[in-house]
Image (cartoon, rainbow, N blue to C red):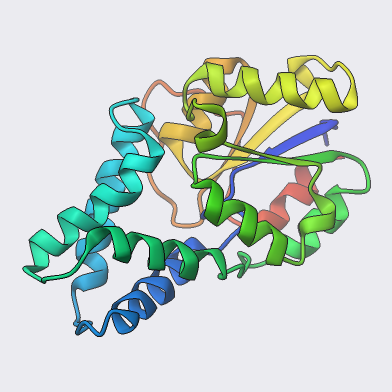
Length: 233
């Protein structure tokens, strides 16, 4: 039986926006802008460093602004390249902010869901990237609000992130209980764990059929965003 949630909270990268594609294009363009060689393996090296730092962010071991610089400092060290990591970070953010490609089916699914529910984006991404990306996207008019960790000083999976998000939405749209909310995201450690920490229903977007985390209760699991239309009323 379908269930209605007045509020649908979507993660951004890897859930609504095709982050893997955007990341690859932005990184290659950044190297070209700095007149640096871009070789096979550089993207994988960057992704390993970036993922490690985002995991540190989730554990509150690093701030978003520090992360944005540190990943390129470490990358240049690893690749033994001579360049300014501050300049590289700035160019990369500019490049990434222009990449608004959506995940397969995202546009149609949001258009359908928007008829019956309010939609918010809840993201650990950087402000300069996420606001610009949404502004350039075709889903802008479907989104009631976007809550960004860098702006509010808390990151998923911290329950405080969700508390601040809810308070902001209540201030704009009126009160609603936690039972009105479903969070949809691709990350077990930030989206699903965060939803559990805050006490709301969760939907794991798992296109790669990754294994479930032991002991983490997930309300729904989908492989394609279009499956949401079979679950939600």
